[in-house]
Length: 231
Image (cartoon, rainbow, N blue to C red; front, side):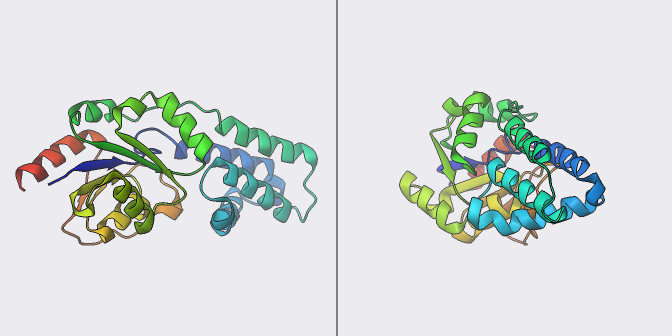
């Protein structure tokens, strides 16, 4: 019934959004003379969304969006020292530790014997760094880094892997990126929410027979077993 299991990386296998939130708070503090923290964060988010088509997902695009936001909020008066600190914040993010989420290693142990595919999106170099630092690469039959997670990108991955969409299960913390595109293709979508998920990844959960929600990734092997037994 299930020939392959896809797993998201950021905020599914390891912490990620936490570092963005911490950096966002420091960025707002840098520009405290030019607005309230919530207003600065809201404008940064708007600029990030507008820049996705130019820069894609990831820390480098976030860094450039912070610079653009600083220039806008100061009417071009932002000084070089502040720009330098923004760049430092981005570089610190690019070297942050990779901290596995609770239950991840146990889940992967229990799924041993299944064909596992790591499917993540974002900056190629940063994603490769985090995958290597996680120590999990050898757990996966394949690692796929895509620019965005759309039905088309999933279809390309599955075609390359020789997996029929209806025999594929994808688990992750983003309803928009990890679940809805796979459901659209006819696969199984498993939503594993994280307490911190970027607002752009939020989406309404449909009433769908192939959609499941879990409390954490440690529950995934049990779900897979139930689905296989019910085939």
